[in-house]
Structures are given as C-alpha cells and as structure tokens.
Length: 327
Image (cartoon, rainbow, N blue to C red; front, top):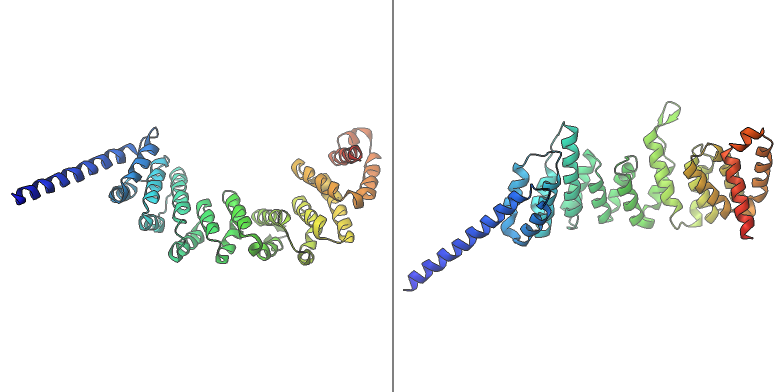
C-alpha cells in the first residue's frame, strides 16, 4: 500500500517538475519577443534556480546580433536569481566580433552583465572587471569598477576619460571616489600626450574632464600650486576650470592672474565656455572690474561692424550690466 502511495507521490513530483520545465521553456521562447520579452525575464527570475540552466543555454546558444535586448533580459533574470558564476563565465568569454552592428549589440549585453555582477563585491569579480578593462573600455565595466571604490581602478578610470562613450561613467565613478581620486586627477590634468607639437585630442579630452571634476570638488588650499599652471594653458576649457578653482583657493594675486587668463581665452571660446567664463568673472568681479573695464574699452575702439559682432565684447557688456543691476 505504502509503495503505491510513494509511486504516485513520485509521479506527481515528476509531473510538477515537468510542468515547471515546460513553463520555463515557454518563457525562454518569449524572451526573443521585443513586446513581452522583459516580462518573460521577470517571470523566469521567479522560477529561481530551476531557470538558471535554461537561461545559460539561451546565452550560449543564441548568437549575438544587433537586436540585443533578449540577451540583456536573460542577464537580468540570471542576476535576479543570483547566478553569479554564470555571469562571470559569460563576461570571461573573449569573443572577437567583426560586424560593428553585432559588436555594438553585444557590448550592450556585456555592459549590463558588468553592472549587475558588481553587486558581488568579491576579489574574483573585481579582478575580472580589471582584466576586461585592459582589453576594451566599456561603460558598464567602468561603472562596475567605480562601485568597488578600490584605488587600483583609478588608472582605468583616468584612461576612460579619453573615451567619448565611457567618459560619463568614468566621471561619475571618479566623483564617487571623492578625495581618494584628487591626487590622481591632479596628475592626469598635468599629463599631456603629444603628437609632434600638438596635444593628442584624446589627451586633451581627458585633461578637460579631470579639470572639470576638480573644479566641482572641495579642495584643500595647499593643492592650488599644483593647479596654477593650468591658467597659462591655451585651451579655454582648461583655463575656465582652473579659474573656478582659483576663485576658491587662490591668493588675490593669482585671482587677478585668473581674470587675465579668462579675458585672454574669451574671444576663442565656444559659447558654452563663454557662459562659464562669464560666471567665473562674476564671482571674481570685485578684483576683475578694472581689467574688465579696460578690455571693454579696448574692444569698443574697433570699427562698428566688427564691434557689433564681437562675442567677447558682448559677453563682457552683458556681464557688466548684470552686475550693475544687482548692485
């Protein structure tokens, strides 16, 4: 009697397991739908560990393509289940994809996997992310490294400032590091990579980004001498960022130097830098007023047509009017 009951119980368990497997297969098939694939991934996560192997197979068997969302959803489901090892194995694969559209899609999947695997703050995950960053700088990897807050990642984050795609993630990570990143940022601001007599564009982008982070950070006065040389740079953005720092940290003499530097680069600055320069001049106006008045007088001597189209003159006159209205 008991043997029959055991057999029926066993059969019932097998039936339940088969039904679960069937339900998981149905949702795996739905993953490829751009309409309800995301919903299917959330449902798969609800099946727990039973869904790990089907999801792993989905990742390994479904070839990368420009339509990357189904693979992203599979990654999200695996992370929700807690399948760290599967995510690590996926990221450790060294796939060389020639087609740029397919590579872009798979990069999106790898970015998602990197961000999600960073919830496990373990040495193996950190060193995997470091190794990945040596091959290619992806925003998701940069984001993930920033979440660890470990100084070994700082050189990677600095290098990522040169990359147009990864730069926002690197900036965010470096801001999160706070004062731990200050010395590294000061060093990178002063480090140029030259091509003959010109700075390499990526080097200039890195230095601008680092200078902007520093200008928005609380810094100790003792750091100003290391940043003072930026006032003599030819690049308007570097000058504006260093002048913002000078307005807070520098002596009156160096503040006047900052004003002169801003007036020097103002004519060649793009509009968005002109606006920042005007804001900085306003902050320094008590010291800057004589120099600004001299510059307005000098530029006002130009022929009428040239004077009417001189953006630097117009910026300074607007600034003077704004300050006078506030007084």
